[in-house]
Length: 389
Ligand code: ATP
Ligand code: MG
Image 1 (cartoon, rainbow, N blue to C red):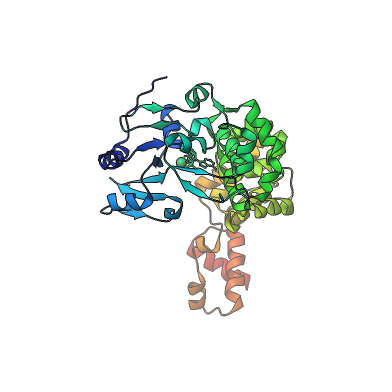
Image 2: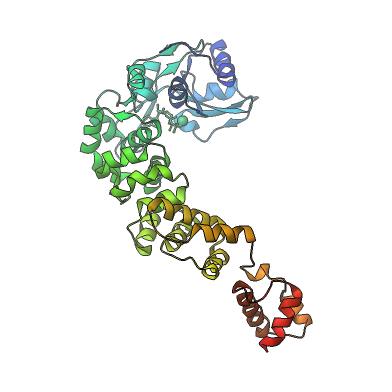
C-alpha cells in the first residue's frame, strides 16, 4: 500500500499555519484510516503539540468551537470545513472507566498515538502527506483487522466504550477482530455496565445499521445481547433492510408489542421511532386481500408505512397484505380519510347540519365511498347524505 497521500485542502491550510508558527501537527484517526481504504470520511481530527491557548491565538480570525477546550480540543472552521485540533495527550487509568482522572499535556505524537484505541485509528499523516505508523496499523488495515494498541485488557479496562467501538468498526468496515483483542473484550465485558446507556445505544445503533452487522451480531452475541436481545435466526435477512425501523423490527421479530417497546425504550429511542416500529409490527401481523380493509390501513397508517410493512412481509416470508391489491389502490388514489372526501364540515354546516351530526354523517359517507357504494363527488355525496337521514 502506498505511504504518501494528498491532504485535503482545509487540512493542509491548518497544518501549514501551525507549522509556520513552529508547532508539530498531524492528521490522525478516522480520516486517515478511511482515506487509506477509500472510504468516505468527513471529520478531520488532528494532533498537535500546540496548547489550546496557542491554537486560539493562531486561529483567532476563524470561527472556533471551544466546547472541548479544557481537554485540549479546539474546533477551527477553515474553508467551510471544521477541523478538530487536540493537544497531544496521554490519559491515565480512569476510576469510572469513562472519564480520565487526569489529562496530561505532553510532548510527543508517539505518546498520543499509544493512548488511542485501535492500531487502524492510530495512523497519522504529516504536513507533507507522509504516513506515520507507530503501531503497525497499516499492516492491520491491509489484513482487515481490528487490534487494540499495546495491552488489550488494560485498554478495555481503561475505557469500556472501546469494546463497543471495536464491534462497531468491525460492522462498519467488515474487519475481523484480532484474537487477543476479542479475548480481552470478552474478559472485560462487565465493564460496559459502567457506561451511560446513551453511549452504549449510540454505538449499538451504528453497529446495527452498518453493512456487516449480521456477521458481528452472529459472532459476538454475548457482548451485545445484554443490551439488545435480538433474534439470531433473523440475521440472514438483515442485509435486505436498509430502513432503520425495519432493521430493528427484523431483529426483534419474535417479540410482541410490549417487549419491543421495552427493548427500544431501554435504549432511549425517541417516542416517534418506537411508535413507527410498533405500527410496523402491528401491520406485519395483518393478512388481507380485501380492498376495503387495505383502504382502511392506508387511511390509518399512510402509504409510507404500508410500503415498508409490505416490503417487510415479503422479505420475512409472511403471507400478508396483498401487494397487487395495494399497488392497484395506490394508483387509483381512493379517498381513505375524511380530508380526502369531496365534502367537508363547512359544506354540511351550509346544508343545515349541526354538532355531532356533522362528523357522524361525514364518517358514514366516507364509509360508503370506501365500500365503493358511491362515488367521491359532491353530487353523489349530497344525494347519499339525504338518504342517510
Ligand atoms: P468515525 O468514523 O466514527 O468518526 P473515528 O475513528 O474518527 O471514527 P472518533 O470517535 O471520531 O472515531 O475518534 C477519533 C479518534 O480518536 C479515533 O480514531 C481514535 O484514534 C481516537 N479515539 C476515539 N475514541 C477513543 C476511545 N474511546 N479510546 C481511545 N481512543 C479513542
Ligand atoms: Mg471521527
